[in-house]
Structure formats: C-alpha cells, structure tokens
Picture 1 (cartoon, rainbow, N blue to C red):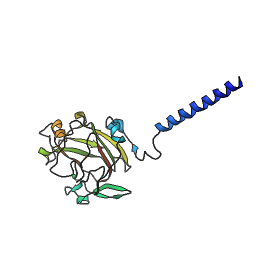
Picture 2: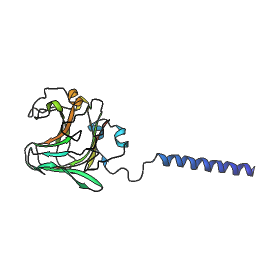
Picture 3: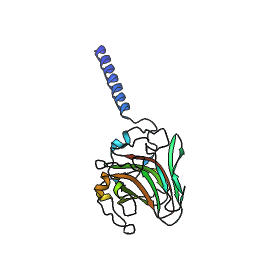
Picture 4: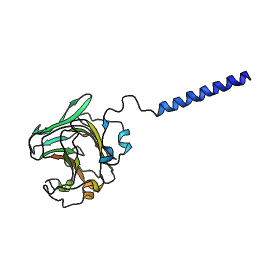
Length: 223
C-alpha cells in the first residue's frame, strides 16, 4: 500500500508540472504589450492577424515598412514640407504639428511611391498607433481621383496626447464625406480597389505623433 501511494504522488506531481508547462507556453512574452489598445470596439472590429505579425522595417527610415510620411505644404505645419520621419528609440516616428485654424494635409503613400496603387478591397482595415491633441480625419485617396478635398474619410479621434493603438475598419458604413470639402464622385468600394494613399487632414491646431500603421492583408514593398 505504501508503494502504491508513493507512485500516485509521483504521478500527480508529474501531471501538475506538465500542466504548468502548457500554461507557460500560452502566456505572451514579458513586456510585449507596450501601447494601450484604446477604443478598439468603438473604432471597428479588431483583426488579431495584424498584431501577430512581427514588425519589419526597411533599410531606409520607415514605420512598418511605410517609407513616405510627408507634409504636403497645405496648411501651416512643422515641418512645412518633406518627410515627417525622425529617429525614435530603435526605430522611427512620424511627427508633425498643425499650427493654425485652417486645413492641413499630410500624406502616406501606400506603395512608397506616388504612382503606385494598391487593391485593398480584400482588407478589413488598418491599425494605427498614434497620439493627437485634437480630432482629425483620414482620407482614402484613389489613384484616379487623387487631388481635391472631396474624398471619403473617417474620423481619427484625439487621444489627449497619449499614445494609443486603434483599429479603423474599411466597412463602407465607417466612411463618409464632409459637405465643406465636397461629395466624392466615385464610390468608396472603387477607392479601395485603387488606393494610392492615406491622407490625414485637420482644421485645428494639433500635435501628431505616428508610431505604427498595419494594414490587414497588405505589407508595402521597401524601395
């Protein structure tokens, strides 16, 4: 009886150790969550694939392989024109300030060059890691209707200057147009099929800091 009891205790200890090992495998690495996932439910349905793909960068400055973050010269901004990318930790951030009560425009080329276009009709949306001191909008501009303000857009809420990560859905219900800028002459679905850039626009003073841009089912080529 004593020998059987000893064997039972050994079996229990082995089973418990194996269960603990399985639990440890399921835990995320320490320090893996560095940015608050704020207002995900309000902004759209999350896609876990976007957070599971390891970050990669290009040989030249980039954020999630997006190399072209540009001040367009429209509105008073700092910097006024050119790249917004600056060193930040082990990578880069795109930083810009909107200074006056006027429309400001900054651009991200989705294909890392102006004449590139991307078919995003199969994408669910994108994750944006950013901070903003006031509300703004992001437009999805197609190659065939690039110029002008009459674009489909979705609100980008202020974060109060805190760095957050939010999901923006490509569901047509999430996108609209502003009477002040004009009604688009094309459908949102057609814009997704020939997307050239994400264009951030705002009419109020704002301090913006972009740290991440992950588009579902799309990774831009490094140039």
